[in-house]
Length: 341
Picture 1 (cartoon, rainbow, N blue to C red):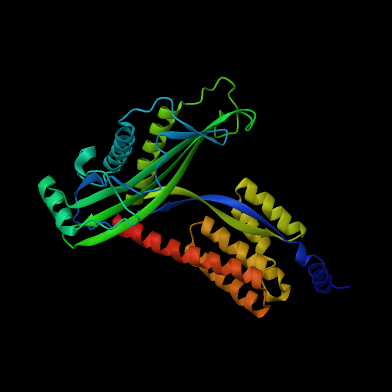
Picture 2: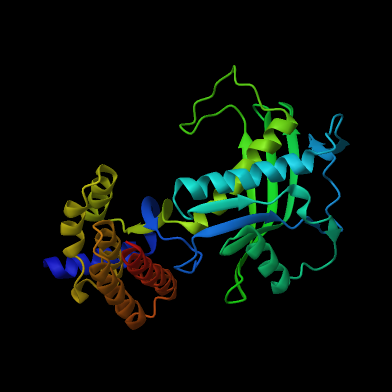
């Protein structure tokens, strides 16, 4: 049996046993909000809008049972909103997103509610920005939060959790443009484990008010990241058909040696290797993305797509098309970053 026939035989047996693994990578992404280039100053304001169903501010969850908080400062909402906006302002200032940042008082808007959240009237937006001498207005439209705690009988170890839900809006008064309206939900969890998975038995869980304040600050910090370029961790997928070379390539990946992995995958990238070449080409696309060669990554992704179409491999094709969209977005992000430098 010659080598080609043997390889074809192996592929036929094992092609359905391919393993897919995730690989985390850090990418540098531009800010998501298209801020006008001449916008140098901004004013932050709390809209003070509450939906009718948002009635649990004085309650918390204790082992899945709803309880009324024993202590609840009358100004708790003010404290948390202020913490959120201060953190947003601090991060915008640190990253030099704006030269001047102003924060309007908590009660600038009276508390109001409704089933729908209409945008601010631009006459009002202009009035606020002209009074504060600012170019843009960022509105925290609505802000909601909820605290839960779980004892060791439900969780091991015991834990605390805060969920924040908010809606943000950015207004450009000159163009009378709603630049963005964005709903964000964040969950902050405490259980005594650090990021490395080590447990500190002496760790003290934050009490309700402290946890709410920390979560509010994180909410403001997270929204600030939409205004400037930052590193983000994302996950990619690569395939490991049950052949020694692909398994060895996976070992090289774990060592960070992408050049050696490329050398192994290239051996299987030609059409002579049938469906196996789809996996090889897809993996090569990922490898070149890791080498910051997005053009070459796109070429290999396109080559993988062509072969997946030829073999009518729907599952592989779906994965490849998704990755092609990711690469297209990366090209746009890189171009945007270059234009900002």
